[in-house]
Amino acid sequence: MSDVSARRRTSFTAIGVPVLACGMALAGLGTWTANGHAGSPPHVAVTKAYVFQPTGPTPETAAFFTLANDGGSSDRLVHIASTDTAAPPRLSEHHMTSFGGAYRQPVESVTVPAGDGLTMTPHGIDVTVRPKGTLRLGEEVSFTLRFAHGEPLRIQAVVVRPGARTDGLPRP
Image 1: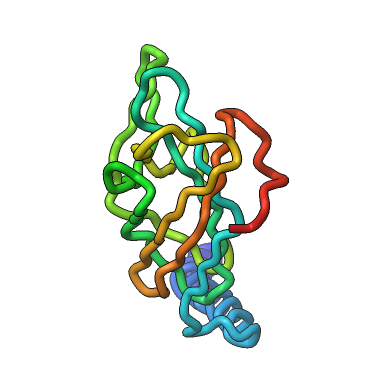
Image 2: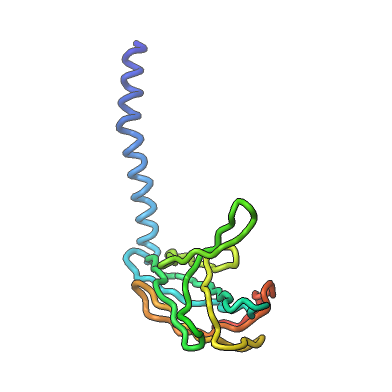
């Protein structure tokens, strides 16, 4: 009798687990569709944009954007342009060495997830910027963000001191 029970358990595991997983996936997709997200395009907006005021002799600084995507599909930020910079802005990612040093590594694009977004930080993804001249606090720097699927966004980023609170900045 135990041999028959073992075969039944093996049969259930072989058939039941995949069927249960498919049912759960179908229920999740049904909920997503019922909420109107199935097949909808990305919809990316910038909710915060700021540039660190350069310090010391370093000619480069960094810009940060908070991107919200309330669409049903993810998008990719693929290019950033600015008429207010001496060189084209570049997407980059910060990394730490085992000796405590930091370095920037260029990246080609970054994903802006559907129903979520992307928050750039000094410890992750940011935009490397080489200003044309001296940036004063409160000054605005213009950027155009281009996406793989969505329309380009033209925004203004305000110049702030590195480490300054940015939660009270106006929307770009």
